[in-house]
Structure formats: C-alpha cells, structure tokens
Amino acid sequence: MPSTHGNPHTMREASTQLIKDLPKDFNTTDLLVDRLKRGNDAPLFSVKRGESWIDVATADFVSDVRSLAKMLLSAGITPGQGIGIMSRTRYEWALAEQAIWFAGAVSVPIYETSSPHQVAWILEDSGARHVFAEDPACARVIGQAAGSLGEEVTVWSFEQEDSPAPAGIPSTGLRKLVAAGAGSGVADEQVETARTSAGLRDIATLAYTSGTTGRPKGCMLTHANLSLVAVNLAPHLAPVLGSRGRTLMSLPLAHVLARAIQQVCVHAGSTVAHAPSASTLVQDLAAVRPGFLLAAPRIIEKIRATEAATAQAAGKRRLFAQAESAAIEYSRSADARARGLTSRRSPVQLARHSLFNKALYPRLRAALGGRVRYAMCGASALNTDLAHFFRGAGVGLLEGYGLTETTAPATVNIAGHLRVGSAGIPIPGTTIRIAPDGEVLVKGIGVFAGYRHNAQATAEAFDDEGFFRTGDTGTLDEAGFLSITGRKQDILLTAGGKNVAPGPLEEIIRASPLVSQVVVVGENRPFVAALLTLDPDGLAPWCRANSLPVLSGAAAAAHPRVLAEIQLAVDAANATVSQAEGIEKFVVLDREFTEESGHLTPTLQVKRASVIHDFGALIEQLYRR
Image (tube, one colour):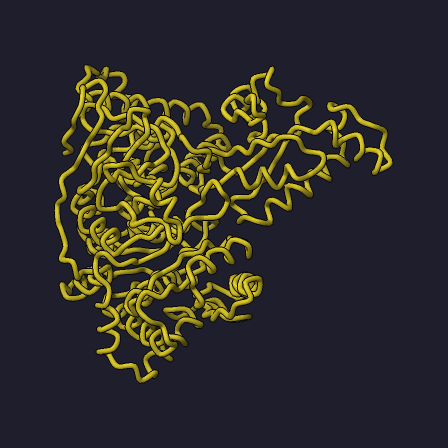
C-alpha cells in the first residue's frame, strides 16, 4: 500500500515502493525470452481465423519473431532506427513490434485512422523510413505521406491486395516476410547481438501524442519504462491477472496503455487475444471467454446500453432499472465500508441483490464472456454509477490514470483495495504529488525520457525536482487514492480514449470568412463536436457574393447555404486529423461571443469553460441527436 505525506484532509503526496528492479543491460525483449525459458506456460496469444481462435505457443511466436528480425537486419535495419507500424489491433502488430526490438530498432506506432498529413509528420520527426502497414489502404496513406515529404519509404504489408481473409498465422503478407527472413542467411548470432544491443536507458518506442500546437510530440519511452512497469505491475495486479489468465485486447495497440498491459501479460504468463473489430466484440468475448479485460469506458458503456435496450425490447425496462439500482446501492455500501464509513445493508437490500444476482446479473456477465471478474479501465474517465453498477453485478471495474508520457498506468485501483470514483493508488515505483495549484505531478518508473527533437517542451514538462507535470488537476485522499478533478490543458479526451487538440481544428475553421469563433467539444463524449459563431463583417459580403439578401445572424445560422459553406471549413479541418479526431457535428449559434457576455477575455480570447457552461444544454442536444 502507498505511503502518504501531508495533512489527511489535504494530502499532497503518495508513493508505492518498487517491487522489483532490473539490471541495466535488460530490455523489453528479455520479458519474452525469460517467459520462453520458464516453459510450460499458457499460450502466449490466441488468434482469430474465421470463426475459430487458434492458440500460439511462446516458442512458435519467438521463432517467427527471430525470423522477422532477420528480414529486418537483411534489409539494413540498424540498432536505434525507427520503424513504423500502422495497423489495427491484431496479432501481427505484436509480432512486428517484437521483431523490431529483436533487431535492436525502435517501434513507431501510427493509428490506422491517421491522415496522410499526420503520418507525414510522424515519419519526418521519427526518421522512420520503413513501415509495417496492415493492408493496401494503410500502405496508400503511407505512400501519400512519403510523397509529400519527397522521401522514399519502404512499406511491408500484413495483407496484400485482393488477398483472401487470413487463414494461417501470421497473415499472408507477414508470413512471406517471416519466410524471407528465415532464408536470408542472417545468422542467429547476429539477431542475438542486435537484440541485446539495447539496455534499460535506450529508447524502445516513440509514441506520438497530441499537443496544443497541433503537431504531435514524440514521447521517447525507454526499455526501462516498459520493462519496469511490466515486472512491477504484474504482482501488483496478480489477483486480476490470475494464474495463466486470458484477456481480450480491444484498445488500439498504437495506444501506449494497450502495449504496456500486453507486456505485463507477456511477463505474467497470460494469454492475449486481440479483438479485430469493435463490430464483433460481443461475439469475440463469448468465444475467448477472458478472465480479465482492458477496456475503454466507452466499451463498458456500450455493453450496458445494449443490455438496457434488450430489456426494454422484452418489456423489462423497469426490471432492468431496479436491477441497476440494486447493484449500485450494493456497491456503494461496499465502497463506504472500505473507506471506514458506517454502511449497513438492510435485509430487503440484500434480498433484492440476491434475486437479481440470480436472474439478471448473469446476463451482464455473459455479455463479457461469462468469466470476467475484473476489467481495467483506462484511456478516458469512467462514470461512477457505471462502475458501481458493474461492480454490484459481479464485475469490478478498476479505473486507472496515466498518460503517454507515463507509459500509461501511473495509478490503478487493485482487487480488494479499490475506491470507486478514484483512479487508484500509485503503481509500484511511482510517486504522485499534488502541486500547490492542484496539478497532478508524477515521478517514477513509467515517466518518459522526453520529447524527441523538442528540448524546450521537455524542459517545460518537468518541475525542479524532476516531477512530470501532467496538466491535469486532482486530489489525494488519506489512503493515497488519486481523484482527477479537471484538466489544466485544453486537450480533449474522448470517450474512446482519443486525445484531440482543439486549437488547430478551431484555427482552420476560423479561416472561413463566415466564422468568428469556434469551440470544439468532446471531453468524455463519443465524438467531437463544435459550437460556432458567425462573423457579421464577413457575412454581409459573402451573402452578396452568393446572390443572397444580407441575412441576419439568426437567419444565417439556419440557412442551408451558410451551413454548407461552413461544412467546407469543417471538412478542411477534419482532413488534417484522423476520423476519430474529426468534428462529427456542429451547431451555428445565433449570437456572438463578447467580453460583455462573459465569453471573451479583454484580449478577445474565448473563455472555453464559460462557453461550455453557458451552452451546456445545446451541447447536450448535439449528443442526443
């Protein structure tokens, strides 16, 4: 349990002691090699082929990794060189990244939804000139990005044009690359020399995260970050992971949290299955029957919504509401007792919960595969009532907190020691401090080495004592549990866990002569939306130029041609980001933001919080449509 420092009512710091350290010549590949040496373990991966799931033994995976690493070495890859991976979450992603590390190189994840503009920046900043692409569509985006840079980029595809659905393991394209490596003539000793060339302090991966300037910053995560988090988080989460446990990974592997937990599983002896598509997640859960999950809160929300809709269709809406209420009540009582508060369950409450635990809660657990006892939730905030509902129904949702810069998990709730509504306690080897202004500061095993090619941003990211400034605000309770209260930065975090920088989108849209101000919203929402105001000085000449009478602000806000023109500006902004970051809906207000209305500063900067508060009802309508 963490040690805490400060007044019990205004706790300022909490730390959890490191469980295990590693030798300085250790790197992330040693997690895999050590698992192979231990032997007699569970399958390392389970891969979907058609409607079946095929287990992959650690030895078979390592054999393919070594062969693919030989292909990379034969292609001239050298230690420390960046290699991109642009793909959805799948087995081949994991194989490619391990091969990159076995070749002594650095992985550079790229979301498969990224635009050519975004990919170009990642290629430029990382220096990656070799990229693994999931399919021809991703390969074309990479080609466009390379063309805009005037650079030649080698692309290796997991899937080939017009190839049938993959039947073997790995997929057709990657299987050919593995075979090419095996026949390349590169000796096993060369691979071992490359594999052991990196130590704890060397960079393992460059993870790009959104910045307020619009250009993502490359977070340099070391082998120490990934390896120390793995070997310390595994025993910390032992009751969750279980013995030879299975999990289904649905988060994008381009997200550092997914990769951090995947390395935890490699070390812990767990089996990892990858969900290839959100559209088949429910079926995949039923087939894999995982014991624990890593999921974005949005996935949990969808499962709850599906069960509620099913109950309503069966004429059991009221019964579902009663069951949900009983579960929340049951969990709140347990939470109160864990905090040392008096909370007695009445015989009626216990009877209601027992009844629903036989009649309805099993359906909810079945939707998660039937065996899940815990689900680790990260990538965005978790609704408290949702957490209580699932916990009361028999599935503990363990919320955590972290950023790309902290290799994701800096704090996490653990089985038998959780407080719903909090982000948990520091993971081993980590200290959380609350600054005088309420900002959450982090120091520990997961904190990154800095931003690539950005010494100024790196310096600004740390305080004088070496704590990373998260940009979030929070509090610590007397037991060291962290609660996040807000965000100092304007970066939005959607319900799907996507970081979105509103500034660049707003700037592009404001370039339209019709637009005065833009406020992009989407924090903990299923998609990004925007509120816009019209520029009276630009509206009148635009009307005349388009053979329209000069429209009032109210009339223009609803005029089809005005809305079509603004849609062009929104489309231009969306073209610079991935689909998940793009603005899906917008509304044009019939009034302006002014200093007098409280929405602009004296320097005419938008007061984002005031706008969101004052137009909260309108924002809610955007998400109800």
